[in-house]
Image 1: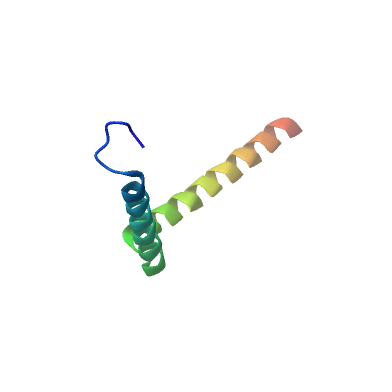
Image 2 (image 1 turned 120 degrees about the vertical axis):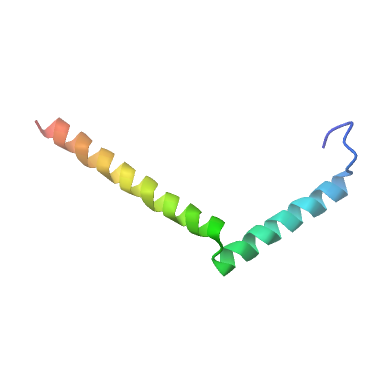
Length: 61
C-alpha cells in the first residue's frame, strides 16, 4: 500500500475482504444501498433509451 501506512499488505487485504463480504451480504439481503443502486441502473437505462429514441427521431427528419 502506502509507504507510511500503519497497515501491512496482509491487513489491507483482510480489510478489503471484509468490506467485500459486507457488500455481498447487504446485496443478498436487499438492503437500502443495493435497492438504490438497482433503481439508479433503471434510471440510467431509461435515460439511454430516451436519448437513443430522440437521436433516431432527429436523424430521420
